[in-house]
Amino acid sequence: MNQNQSKKVALITGASRGIGREIALTLGKTGDYKIIVNYLSSVESANKVVDEIKSSGSEAIAIQANVSEKDEIQKLVNESISAFGKIDVLVNNAGITRDNLLIRMTESEWTDVLKTNFEGVIVLTEAVLTHMTSQKSGKIINITSTVGVHGNAGQANYAAAKSALISYTKIKARELMPFIRVNAIAPGLVKTDMTSKFDLGKLSETKLGRAADPKDIAECTLWLAGSGGDYVTGQIIEIDGGLFLWSDVEALAH
Ligand code: NAP
Image 1 (cartoon, rainbow, N blue to C red):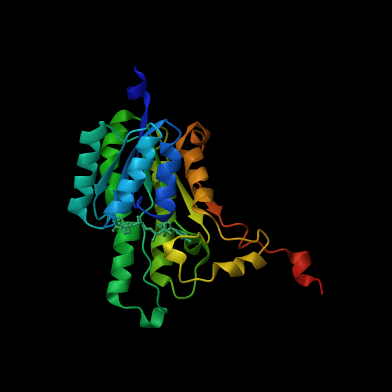
Image 2: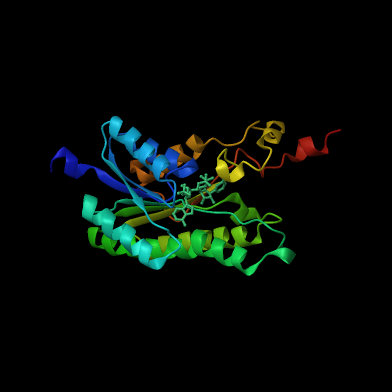
């Protein structure tokens, strides 16, 4: 096998910005992966990610596709396979928020979030699995959220989608053993466009004193995608800087 054939192919959804961008760059710059940068509308940003990966010596392409639409998902998989012949790592990262109090949440706020953050993930994963199962190998990494674990007022749609993704991760891991690994990462608050409406400076008052950087999530993804993750499946890894940890002794102290 020549060096080019031995490279793994990683498809990262929503890789034009934020966490997905950092995951694409981190995997791409190792030299071990060919990278597919999926995006919805930020064509310039997606092309910049591709250029940065290419300038580090790895292959990369950008593919526009709305991962909440079935026919576009199939197009994404078809174009990925015709470009690189296989998909070894799928990172289901693309996601949106449409926050509102439950009592005021509109039907479209529900359906938009569920379609993008959950239903689309299932359709894409199943389409990719037709290739991974014939390869008898593969890694699926779902980007969920601490909100899917703990809940959050004003995010019922998002929490429902992200906790469904957690259940899906655990079930697929069981169903796909022993060849394919399925894990999820649940970030806390990460500095991206998605959280630009929040005052992340307030996190300086927490134990680790800062919000997450996309790099914190990308490093864990790299580990799960590589040999470090070979003996890990069905896990939900919370990367939140201890946001939900509670120190009893300190809380009780005056
Ligand atoms: P972001 O900065 O808003 O970036 C979102 C990315 O997803 C963009 O690349 C966007 O593409 C893409 N995208 C959105 N809808 C899409 C669709 N229908 N089809 C294809 N691509 C689509 O978000 P982020 O903060 O990096 O979040 C990434 C993931 O982490 C999401 O699943 C999010 O729920 C999760 N997460 C984030 C945080 C946080 O604090 N930021 C915390 C927990 C979990 P365009 O650029 O083309 O629009």
